[in-house]
Image (tube, rainbow, N blue to C red; front, side, top):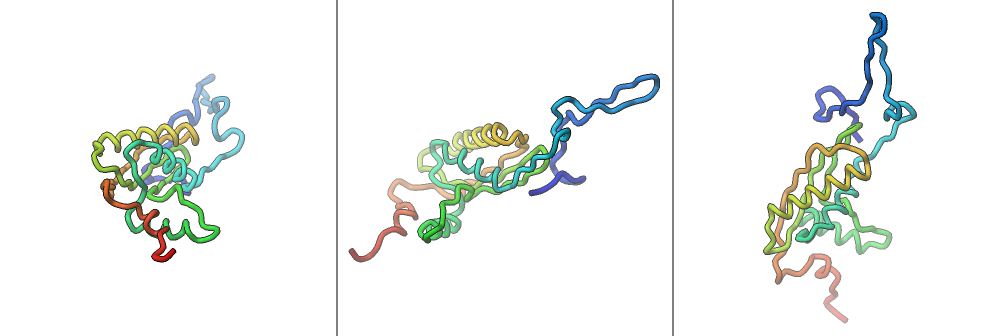
Length: 165
């Protein structure tokens, strides 16, 4: 988790306080329901990464998330008893008090319009993260690391085969 600090790329959105002048004096009032008025909620980077990973996978044309090496290690981890599938594979988030920024690495299906898939992923991720966390998403960077060709086997399928029966 990261906090908003001077020099950080995150800035607080308005709504912090209102100032009113009475008889030459100024007073500061917090709007009702202000985030800081009844406690603080922090959201871990991993939470945003999971939300973004699920949202990206929902887009047609996205075959997998992460680079080839990350997918290979993930496939091995999935086979270990007690290991679980990582929905945040291929996602990196930086979370501030009111904003977040994400970097995604995706593999697309062969034949899709990559720019259209990236735009759909970006829109889906922004909508999901903002709706579920209340954080403003300031950027979603997408790196397309591979294309899944029709005749290629999935790494998950290939690693599950045995040579003998």
